[in-house]
Image (cartoon, rainbow, N blue to C red; front, side, top):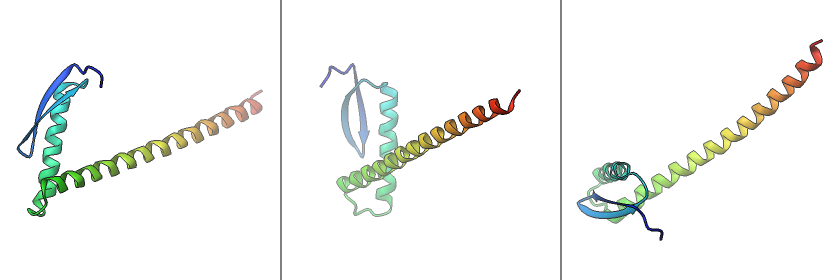
Length: 99
């Protein structure tokens, strides 16, 4: 692993984690807070859910969200390409019409 310049400490569900990263420390702390809130919401629905199960549920939720966003990005890329081609056809046709 590369020599990462920042060491950030976050606390999630009372557990302390030290993270080495090249990201902005405040950003990493913000992610830790978001994870903590997500775990609280997951466990609020059922206090029998263990920490490990809550983490797995959170990971699955985040992976699903990530995949959905990737699919949206892909679809937008396809739509941009379609619009670009349509615009090119309009431009070509307008040159045929213009004297």
